[in-house]
Each structure stands twice: as C-alpha cells, then as structure tokens.
Image (cartoon, rainbow, N blue to C red; front, side, top):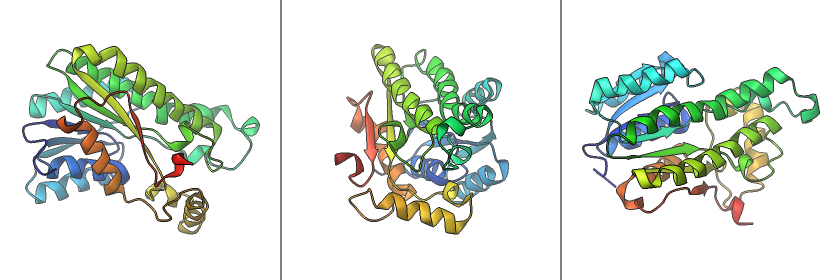
Length: 258
C-alpha cells in the first residue's frame, strides 16, 4: 500500500503509543502528512520527531480528547498546519480504571464517568469536529477503534468499558449512514489481543496474565501487533475501501468467528 495516501492529510489521536502511534506511522509511511495528537506531550513529540527523522511531514499537537475546546483546537491546528483534513483515526480509550475485577454493581460513579468520557465522549467530540470540516470540503474518511468488549461479553473488561465501546460501534454506524451522501465514510476496527502500554499499567506481570487469559479465547494463539491493527485502519481509510462504510471489522485472530 505504499503511497496510497500521497497528497492526503491525516489526523491521529492517541498517537503517542500503541495502536495510535502505529497508525500515525502507517499513514506517514504511505505518503500522508500527519497531525499526531496525544494527551502526553512527551510521547507524542517523541513519535513525531522519530517520523520527521525518517523524512515525513508530521506535526504534534497536545489535546485532551475528552475536552471539546481541545478537540476543536486540534482540528483547527491540523487545518492551519496542512490546509486540509482528509482522514481521521480516533483511537483514544482506556479501560484501566474499569478493569478492577469488581462486579459492576460495586463500580463507582467516578470510574463509570471517567470511562465513558475517555472511551466514548472522545470519539463523539473527535468525529463532530472532523466531520464538520469534511462535509464542507469534498468528504473524508474516519476510522474509530472499538473493542471486542463492545460486541460481546469479555470478562476481563468492565461494564463501563463494554458500554462505552458498544457506543462507539453504534456511533460509527449512525454517522456512516448519516453522512454517506455527503462523501464521508466511517468505519471502526475491534482489536483482538494486542499488547499495548495499557496492559502494563498494573505491572508487567499482571499485564501478561491478562494477555494469557484473553488468548484462550482467540483461535490464532498469538498476540496481534499494533502494526497489524494499523494496516487494517490504513486499508479502511484508503480509496481501496471506497464502498466500505458503517463496518465494524474485528482484527481478532478469529475470536468473533466462534
């Protein structure tokens, strides 16, 4: 897929690590000019600097995707830097506070609201401002990241995370139909067992225990690389997927086929 984004401008949230960073790399290495965004300026700037060192035209702008002013400024900053916005990948999400193992009747309201904000509100706000520009400028493509927990029961995920990610699925489909006649395609991927920094928030040992537990449900018994998730995002956002919209694509080693 070399060069499939030549002349395109892409925006990637959560680009400082994990699937977000791999996605930003994938867009840049396929010819896009890319705005990387992350709440952590250290990791975000480091990712952008690395890509600039490879000769790619990328920028970084810090944003908290749960705050509308930040998201509006991010889209505005992308337009100011590159003059366009053709592709957006919305990858912000966090299950950490929602994965304590407690039954959900014991979950705090603070934990619920945090998870909804990070994993669902961030996608809503990002899409709102991205699509507002795209519909007035010839269209565009959006790819969100949901979770298998938003599609089926995953015991290692909490109720708030499952509800938020199910919301991402419905929001993706709603937007896809709503904006199809205005040139905007909207899809999302649902990753299988893809080790990222999130698995290590509770320590490397616990992260590995979670991975081992989840792999028991995945027919292809290996973890999925962040670059493999990014490759699918790149395809969905490319002209090669021109008739694909409103689709939730599990990249899950066969988990949802069972």
